[in-house]
Image (tube, rainbow, N blue to C red; front, side, top):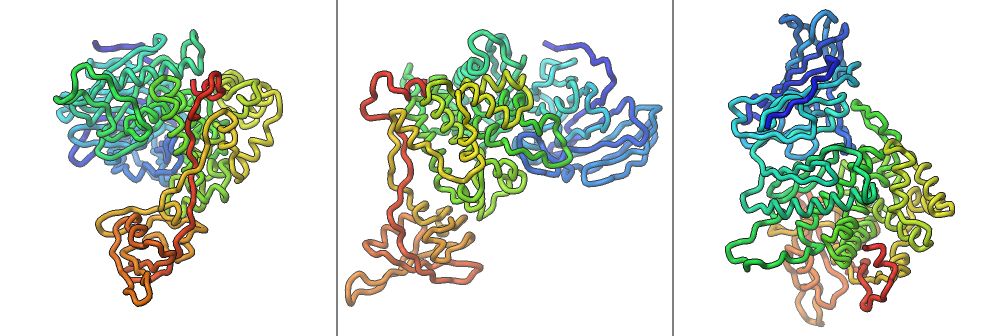
Length: 609
């Protein structure tokens, strides 16, 4: 049914977005400023909250024109993302713009003949000085959008059944935080504690098992609302939309206050039973390696952000500055703790077993342990330098940085297990207490320390200083053993033993990264090298030397035999080099698992639900 809502009382900025040409990927946007100032300024954001990199969205602005009372108004560009119009306050100021939209990620905008998507930070100029007035967004239909639908979390003003029409936002911040999905998509919905949740999927076929996706997502939603609000209270929002774009190869998500934009592989979506399926057969249990498990973890992660970073957020994010970097040292908490809870809450929702959860935790732990940068950069530094390092991945990134996602998740685990071992509280209690202490708003590290002191009944500042602001190893393995779980060592993968990160294929072994202190680094291998083959000395006196073409690292080990040394043949800048390499000593990685004979009442059972 068409939907209407009261019109905002103040005449704030109004945006009209229309598909101009899907084949050239162009949106047309008309901004009407009803009460402009003299010399009205407008600006396009340079970044989008939740993705900490200056992305210069104005690079996709094709043109901008201004007019008042039907007459052209001079417009002057002041810097890379700001313009000033030679306007007067006597009449509405209209700015007409066109934007190129061909980025399939969740961060910007996309348009082709079958689908449109945009974040308003990519298309909607800010009317400076009017950011706190009510804003309206009109999504216009035309011949290019016949049969399309609209999905957005913005409250409707007047819309058609398809969703095209007008929406309202209380200010620019809400508008910027409300992505829009356009096209032909699958849609389903459910309610939890009276709050409607909609799930839309673009890019999937009729084989999509939407009911299973809805059912599993609802369990995640119910578990997380209970986590934050107990068994009775309503959540801190009144609507929510999941927007998933299914592609051949992609993964990612971006959180918003009332929605999330997701990307996943089509192969990772749940499928309806095929023609050879056994009627009435139960769904197989999820494995840690299943793509669908990863997708559910992504859904859980982005939904947890509805509280942790979109409402409870760094004090530095009290008001976003869209024109420059917004630095904070707390991403280890807001992204890392969210990464800890995303899979843990899958377990508590009953979607994965304790064994699968521990396999996922093992993967996270080894990602940190196999990163030399953990001894170089603290996770607090990693948070602050996200703008210059985390999102600018290059060949030396693993040697120079640590992920505030993965190490932050391990810090959360260590903190949770510390509190549980001392018997006074849990990290669950800490998160809820922070929510209450900060009134679901800005927080500082000092707030966390105060809550830990109150609930943990001792000062945990030294632990936070060591784990967050230092570069030493975390005590996770010992804590897991004390909880009654197995934390053992198993042989490391060959690439890790050699100190390489590679891509293997028919052309050879492409070296992407050489880890500091490794045998590969000592041999002189470098990122960008193509490892083509190996030369081996004779095994027996009088024997012949051997030369082998290799395409995979396992082939190197196979041809090596009992030898301990070899010569690598690599191509570098079209030169062929011979580099002597000493075979690495055995190395191990961490393995976390359930005990072989679980005891009744074991502490880990309470932790894993």
